[in-house]
Length: 381
Image (cartoon, helix red, strand yellow):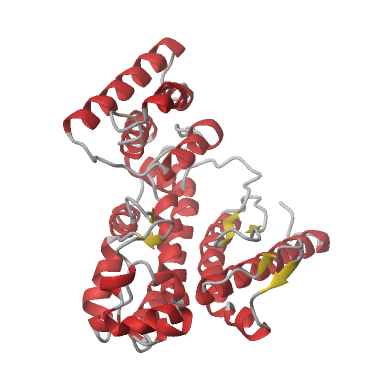
């Protein structure tokens, strides 16, 4: 194994980090001010709505958020290097679009360039990232909830609320069309109820993204939980594979995946679908189910049967329980899992059982997943 990376590699990965820092800082500034950096005028010119000071304030969001992502990825990286596994430096993925709300990045990934030879190595490399990120995210959330500004802070972002006074929530949220709110997870509820210095200071879920430390902490938990899904070769997949072994994991992982897709698609199709859209919407969703289940089932015919069953149950539940709703946003991630990342886990040449300490740590991360997972992380009205 090479002792180190080349200077060119260091420069390239540092460039990606700097680019992600810029895009997340801009995104943070946009969320904190409730304004886009750029808008298009009637004569098709781009004009900036943010001052330099407002853009720099975005660092209150970007630095802690990237700090958690960096801790996560380097947790994987240093553990892999400990086992002399060839691995890349983190590839940060900048993502910002003008005139659209973004979080500034799509995360970061590392690429392992060697085969992993033992279940212990899979487990250790997989668990190191989420644990490192979680350890950084908790103090971040703690700081955010113990340093909440006065309730009047929201008037600096939404001056139009000021005429309603501190009772604005009963007025401005009556019609929330086009608004986004953050969902809840168990850890978030704990911080709101038991950590916040004054529960009256906790912002409404429609305004949480304007509080940079809380928003960065929420996104950190979101990415942690998403990576801890016990499916395929996600971090959670590596961990559960280490705990229960190759054969048991590859029996359970497809079950978890089908349950994940089943929940995500609740409410997609049903009697509420407009008649003029019903044919195409039903056809597209049925096709989606077949595409994602094709990688789960051993034959195309079985994938078609499973897709038909899930589709029919979804339609039936929509009739029996009007208003039942999953989270369609997870369907995109489900497609990535099925077609790119994979649902199953490869075996390791060395399948020796994990030590008791590792097993305890593994089940602890299962608890972290339960506490951090938001069934509907981003709510759009």
